[in-house]
Length: 353
Image 1: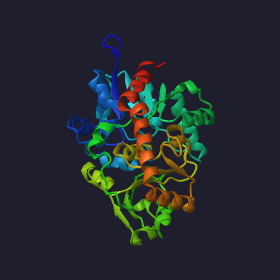
Image 2 (image 1 turned 30 degrees about the vertical axis):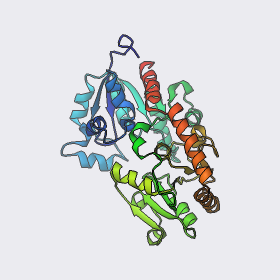
Image 3 (image 1 turned 120 degrees about the horizontal axis):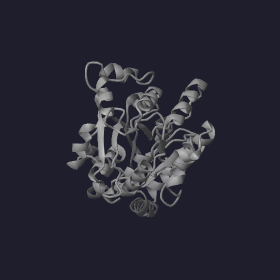
Image 4 (image 1 turned 120 degrees about the vertical axis):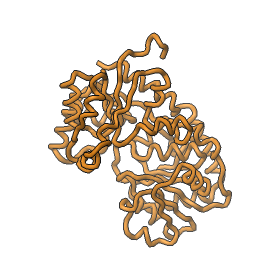
């Protein structure tokens, strides 16, 4: 986008936690450039963008964080940040309070990557529909998800912009392809409730594989913690995580059945960027991004036997591992770059109704 065509609007981005320090971390090369889902690149391109972290600072920050699941508590600083803005971009769950506040203040409203599982509660579904109606644009990472939500909530499909997620392959290039050729280690990463680590642990129980799990303990079934061929790690630096990738032969992203949101997409792409073959549970979203058997191995949800077979096959077949790595890396480089994602984000933000 040229200087003359760049919008003159002011944008405020809202995140589910403190985000401002990540700008410096990206600039120093300590974290990959896809962090902040496009904000950093817009800043680089000369957009008038700002992050508002005001809700997560001050005396009531912990209270706001603890109550966030149930109710949004604003802060004076947040409204102060909003006043000069033309567009509010919320990278977070839908919030009826924030939606109404933006509209009452005369601001354009964009929700970015805010769509997760469709709730079972009719009240929560009604509130989500109100948010969708109030929003000027809803940006998500999957066409199948946008189609589903448009149909479910009877909201025009044009309200949704689908961008395919992009990853900073350059950040991982020094680690690409480096590993112990004889390794039987399996790596699985994830901290969202869509992961099914129980199935993965059962799948490697009677195999030669050793499993590294990078997650939060509360997401694990109790039996996993007592398995001798499983090691659980919680919070790692990127350097430590890279070292685990290098010690592992394959990466596995086990997911629960019937997921309709992009759970696991970043973990899949990160492994591919480092040069690891990936096994994942089939979802419509992953099938939209990658070809089964060519870029990735997809297995049926809840199937311990399919997961075991896929792990054993991939650990024993070097040629298959090599082909998956080549194909998936090529696809990342051609279709899922940070620049391609941000080009789409620019378009979605410029063309607001």
